[in-house]
Length: 309
Length: 158
Image 1: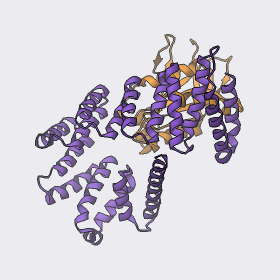
Image 2 (image 1 turned 45 degrees about the vertical axis):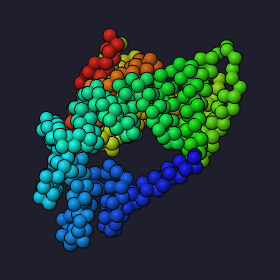
Image 3 (image 1 turned 30 degrees about the horizontal axis):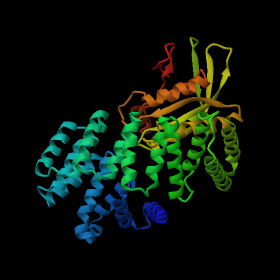
Image 4 (image 1 turned 120 degrees about the vertical axis):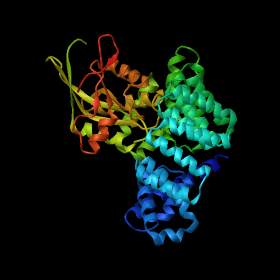
């Protein structure tokens, strides 16, 4: 199971690397723009500048555009969103205009138009537009999420939390939403609630190391002996799931052990924990020796301080 | 803390700050200010900020303890060898018009203040940063809350 998780992470990393390579290549006029745009769409990567530049170049080139045939509409949509991200609202408006002529009355275009309101900061119009779409389709996930985004953009975090909770009652399996909620709770320093969200995520997808790591960090921040011990367990499971490559988890184990020994000074020391700590410390030192030998001294000092404290 | 305190921000430090914020336009960024006390006896006291260490651009890592503890330790060690210390903290908000210092920034500021009583917290003004990028405005892009006597961070002009 751990191997599958590592393999999945490896392909994701490969995809990211390929995306960046294509971006470079297409940016220097070396072709591959369409491939890049498709990959960006598949990975849902947020790279507005290159997408806008390359997408617009493709769209303005009428021969390239006609070669795309029916795919050109997806490209219009992609460029419209990228334009809004770069605040090029004129470009976005043009793209949406073309699309609405081609697909009149479409809910998908309606979402884009409402997004344009959002980009202009016209929140009331955007909310009205979204409410209209929801009347026809009350289970439109994307529109629900945009409502949450509007609340967040206006800085109203408690409203965003309220909307997110309502959304999760309807769509309990939306992991991204649970993550978003956890992040908002953390930013509001509501650590217990954030921990709950991460627990849900770990239950649903126990092989994703990201959730273990985030959960451990929240537990560490909450503090207290039990939380620290649990945090150390989750740092350890992160290490297992990432094959020992996650530096933060290695650091986390050392920090937890140091903090726990601070709290349990004078009480019976556990024997099993010291092995974990020394293994993590060794792994950290090796990592730094290989990747950043100039900083190795810092780590040695820090570890020495921790063992003494 | 009644004495006036002046802060000199080295150009390299300032540029690193601004670039860090510009690189991640959709997220909040933060980092540490590193420097030294130039002349403790004179008045106004001058603190020279020589360098910055960008910390993170992930909204969910900002208020979490383990990274901060680690980072403060490592940075103190590393720069301690050169006679520098952590003298402050900088923060840029994700929302463009958000001109408040978030609670987490205040807490980190308090923590640094305990070790270095002349600590400064810099909050980037996103609007000014945007104008500076367009070349319109050459004013400095930081607001500078300082620790007042009643241990609250209040704004002061740069």
